[in-house]
Figure 1 (cartoon, rainbow, N blue to C red):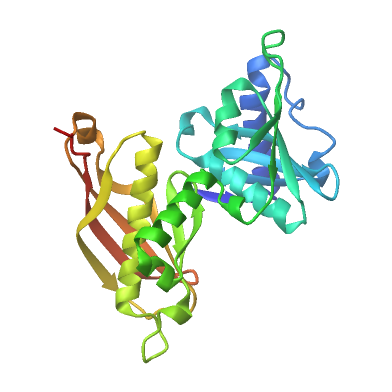
Figure 2: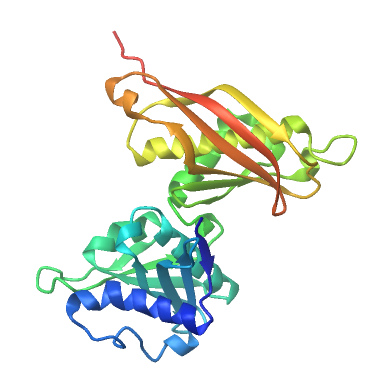
Length: 302
């Protein structure tokens, strides 16, 4: 279990700055203490910790002006890289920047992290000459808007939302919207008033549809991540209902809850996967869905 926290205790701050030094300064033979600067006192800090409270990823955001926020000192522990924790930090820092009234955010990036930030919706605005200076940094920028509140692959999510509206009419009737995608977790939300029964709670069928579409959406995006062709269809699904939904519903699907793999598609064969989703009433889980999906390989023209 991983959690995003605001480091506040002496011990948390010690671990936070130690990870910053270990990743960003020690490889360049810089002494402990060099990882801190004068902006740390006026910055917002976030840290992903594991179940033992050990830091996994860190980052901070400060303001250059009332309109401009800057994210700096992003670092992930080497043993946890590739697990999506950097996206969690960027998302948490952007939430702070938006809440504080920033109109845009800037990030300086070296070559090795440039692609990561572009996947998070950032645009390259100033390219560094890394041929003359390998440590030179590019500047990226994101103008805050409703469309790019989705932290990872916002363009893909916008396309997916359009596919739902055009090809799956029930999604529009239910008011289903993509709320967030991190590369490893996909969250949707629906409008309760469009899905109520005679008791004023959410139809069981609507809960099932929301959970199914959430799993479907995550699998669709994962096909794009892997650059694989295919069409996702539901083969079978089961759901367990525990409590009625009385508030605006939301559903999440996580990649770690997927079994099976996409590899048969590389041989032009169908792939079979199982994925789970949870439906929430506010923060309380009220239903668990498990779907058996088939990704249909494209048929070859003869």
